[in-house]
Each structure stands twice: as C-alpha cells, then as structure tokens.
Image (cartoon, rainbow, N blue to C red; front, side, top):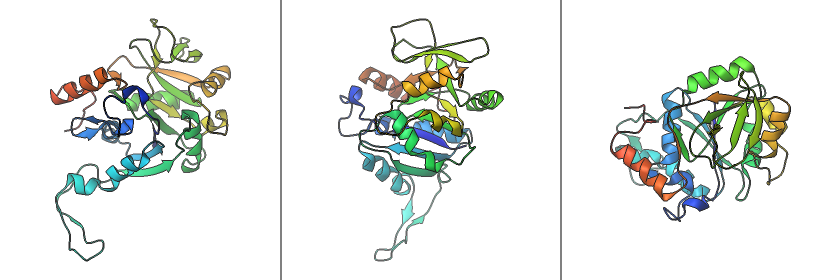
Length: 261
C-alpha cells in the first residue's frame, strides 16, 4: 500500500531548531524525522512512498538522491558515467519514492489532491504528516479501514489538546471534528490515515484547501470518516522541547517507534 507523506509546509513553529531546513529534515539522531517515519512504515511492509513537497523541496530530494553515498561504502571510476559500485547493502534499498512538487504555498488538502494522479482508481493508500512519530499498529489500522469501507480512517490519540478534536460513536464513525480546540478529554487527530480513492471527491481544486477543515467536515457530514483508537506512543515534533525529547529517547534507545534493528 502506498504511503503519502505531507512534507511541504514551512514549519514556522520549529524554526528555532533549524531555520535552514524543511521540517521533515530536522534530525532525530543521525537521520531526519521523515526517514524515521518512512522506516517505520517500511518495517511493517509499506515501502512505496509519495512525498508531497513544497518548502525547500530540494533539500529532501538531495538527501534521497545521494542516499547511497551517505550510507554505504562505494567505489567510482572517475571519468566514467554511472560507474558507482555499492560495496555493502542497506535495508532501505527497496524503497520506491515519488517526489511530487505540490506547490510552495499549497495547503494540506491541496497537496493531497495534487497527488491523485499517482493513485490508481479503487486503490487505497496510507497518509500521514512528515513531523510525527508513533508506534501505531499499521496492520490493525489497515484491517479496521478495510472492515468499514468508508472514505477515510484517522487515528485517534490522547495527548495534550492543541490539535483537531474528534468525537465518534460506539462503532467508530466520527460525528464531529474540530480543528485545534481547547484541551479536553477527547481523542485528537493523530495523523496516521488510511484512505480510499473516493477521498479525492471530498477535496476541492485550488491551493487553499486545508484538509483538516472543509474536507474533514464534509466527510463527517456524509458519514465517511472513521476513527481507529491508538493508546500507545504518539508524538509530533513542533517545538524545541519536543525536538530534544525525541532525540533523547532515540539516543537512549527508548524510542517506541524504532521497531527495526
């Protein structure tokens, strides 16, 4: 199943960490956070990615274009084109990555709409943000999504309330969605989604469509948004404090999302 990652925003809230980097490229340990997200998905069998690029897209492209040189031993013969010989392997060598330029100033919904051409009709796909880590059970998430056949499943988590709040009935169908309310005891949007191709029908054309606003409200209105509960680890990286916390967890080998050797 393809994994769509939203990684084109400016990341203004975390500029004090790295002003010259796009947010998904801010490091956790020796790798950017987007690598950790992709590594988690790939560890559970999802290694085909579509990156929705925007701000400083060249930095993300350069990282992956030069990934072999960054991570392996290799030899080259100067003067001979394409002479690079990889001398040792790495576990990311089967990743397929599509780099989609979705606009410098596009909103989240607009970025999703623009990668429609890379999704086959009737194909389901996974969707997430390029700045959050979790140990959500992706297999259970996909199974839940397939069981109800609605347009979109989102993962509901329970951190401090500064994100989109969701309310659902006993079957998991979402009955209300509010973007960034005051702190409550309700679950919030954790950003690990599974979508059907029909999701694109709920997103208008143009660059100003915020996925978490009208598309979400329309999905709720038509009963097409479902919630998968996750009570384990979930953490975005929006602030210097969160950046330091994630790096400490990783350096101390206490990172719940690190399920690979």
